[in-house]
Image (tube, rainbow, N blue to C red; front, side):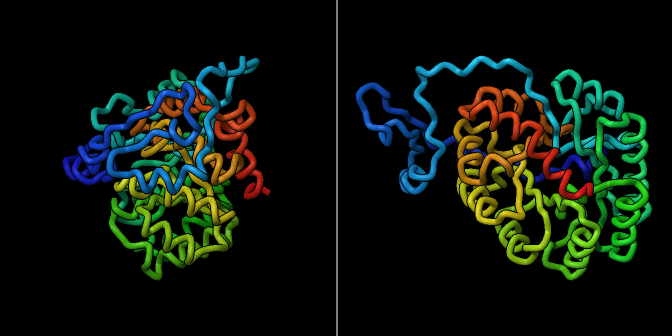
Length: 329
């Protein structure tokens, strides 16, 4: 992994600061107190908590035991970044340098299937690089037939080649997913005309668009492209607490949009429940952002959540399968 890559990739992970931890969370004893008094309150954020209390997931009392599970939850990961054949891997300290090691780690965590894209594409500064990365993914999909689906990643600054590559990945390779597109790795703005053409091509090819955004970028994309089927990774962004409710509420209001559980926010107890309550049980997808983050942490949060067993099954795999059926016909 190059020094430049180490410095710039996944900028959100470097934006965590002491401000997120500064609020001391307190919870009143549930005994003899009204439900509102039991809501966790962050110091300095009383107004925001009050705003969302009426829309919260309403977790059941702690005394109610989790229902016994009769079957294992199946994990279908919507958000995987595989290492490139050249050895480029998104990990702070690389431990899964090859695709076989990548797969073995998924085996350890219980992820059975996944949507996979190549780090080589994410960092591509030329059409030759993102085309090569997508072909690497196609070889992995073929080698592990039935386990992975390929995702096409392109650089819209090379728009002619990008549009042709999206079409080739759809028609020749069977990919139905474009992204995760990360505009800060190249970089480019989502407001450029080339990105609009890229989205139009994705819609024309009946593919899912997966795009990494900060809140303002998310607002722009939702407003600009209501015709697209869009998956937004991450509950939160670089302004985690300030934006997490706004991001989830935006997705909730737009039926063409989905959110995945990767990255910021899923580990904040209550946010998964809030997402399912507001966005709905059918548009929250299991995503881990592996090989950066460990899928087991997301699985543990879902399994320990106050969701129903049916909702857990939907988030873990069924929602993604249903989305793919829409674009595989």
